[in-house]
Image: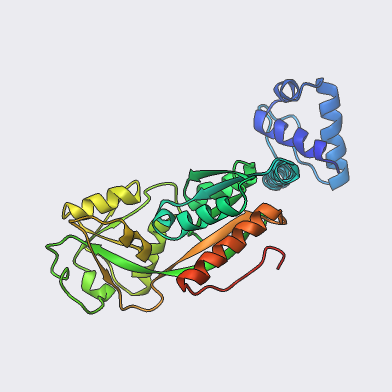
Length: 306
């Protein structure tokens, strides 16, 4: 079985017509029919209902279609990622979630630029989900995100687990309280979560934390981005759970309070294409650890080659 068999079959299944599929593939119809017949003979099973108009797949054909698409997607991802790794230009394209701008990311990038001025660095704000797609498509080389997920083509390193805090309007009943707050004490508040899309996202992390604590907020309002959530907190429209580094976003109408619940944390993830151990990435990871050391931030060091 060869990749062309998969491409021909997927085209036929999607077009549901031999003539249209052949036109899409830029081949004549007889060779397409022979390739599908050959594929069925190799599998020893019928994939297409004989004589059906429009064309229908057998149960085996429907199963094969799902997995054929997955294989072709993986092949395209592999091609794109290999081309990106093999480029000789000294470039580094970095994706980041907005909240990391209020933490150590600016220091990390400033340190990296100072040490490696010959590398052209570009930064792109995007959600963690968008970063994973951009990595596979070759649009970025590394992502600083927060969402843990499984994808065999992506390598993730947990840089640190950042504590979360609650952002409150200044007239909130807990705005002057010194001791840590518990999530159960926030059950009567409107909870602002972000980003609204794409999902899953940091919003789902926050909702999961409340669910694990058996706390149901009085209302949940989804907003597009962090800055909007903070603006609504300042306007007294609700509260927001944010990474502690967001406290650097000073706003006269927002106060921050620490949380007492254990494991109220959000990871910061360093995501790269699996197998990509370019010097640019190794050096960026080393610069990240150096900044953490200087700031006294706890982390578990992990190498790309590890």
